[in-house]
Length: 372
Image (cartoon, rainbow, N blue to C red; front, top):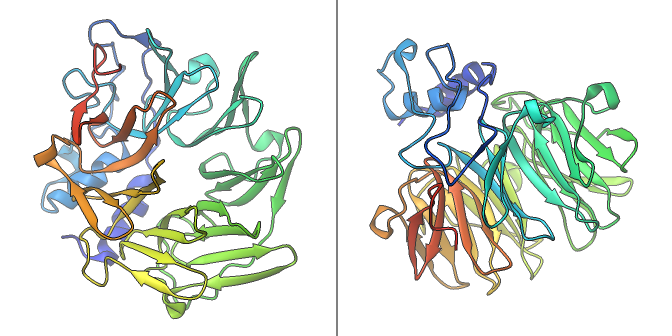
């Protein structure tokens, strides 16, 4: 395993590589789409990083990972959402966003007015408008098609890492350079105090906001890069860091469950649950494995699901944890998006593409099947 300090250096170095791949305009049912392969020796900063983590001695100049696995939609799905018409939207790491309308799978990229090739978050508002947080700005999809907003429109930075639709209908956008709020017409830069962490281990950028949530008291939780969590409560604020019992200051994902508990996925400390007073650090206490946790999701039965890098997918039923991995036909152990749709189809996206759970087993979703 790569040491923590070395891993942070790798992530910092390789994430600065420009994401330049283009995706196909449409597919399925169809042969493998024609992909414009990158001219450099790496497909992305994240692919390179993962290869080095798996084999630190491998020369970076020779790293080459596939953009597509046989029959797959793409090599890395980041998130899944559904609009009021029942269309599934599938965010990718290199090829923009896909939409499946029940019969056709279509790819949308920058050539179609989409903001960027990497989708970090998706939100559907009460009007049915779909919002996408991309590495090239904030993209809106409505009856007029795609519209993208950037720093030219007042966004604090174009590289958006997290997004929240609050209970007033405002969009909060966590970027690589701070926090913006959007009311549908105007962007405001939100200043907030960063937790006072001594010698923070910044992975990418000091002001990067990795995750956002609003709790039952309408407070806004801001997960920072290596500096813990800031909680905004109107004109006041508070912090959560390792000094307060947080498992790790590098927070990757946040979720509030139906009981008001906040679940916290981290890069190096696994997963924790905070009830407002104290933490249960499940990974550090040895109840589960996997120190890098994303894709926190509460299912319709109240179960908590999440992906643990290299371990698979965990389900917590309120008492016990169950892990799903290759033995359950889950081919990719880097799950970053989990979603149950209105037809009760259960989707998992991540490394090696899109998967669907049926009868407690996983199916790999190809362009020509496993949709219904």
